[in-house]
Amino acid sequence: MATSPNQPAPEEDLQPEYNFRSMRGVVRGKYAARYRERLRMVRLEEDVSAAFADEAAVNAALREYITWRQERQTATAAQSTAG
Image (cartoon, rainbow, N blue to C red; front, side, top):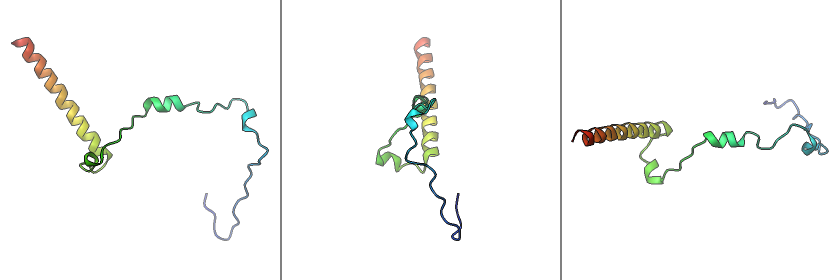
């Protein structure tokens, strides 16, 4: 919360004698596994990332590639069963 220049800064109310390790129900990293499960981060090389304007452009290109690959696999499978 922003304060005006005329108001003094709020005082810190967190006291050094608070012992958070003794609190019940507090679990460090409780949701870390769930977060990691859904997080997929890919680091692009500099020359590859230069070809895209933003994250949406990368996703659109990858979706197009996936569609093309699936269509190609379907066509290859149809040719092998027909011939």
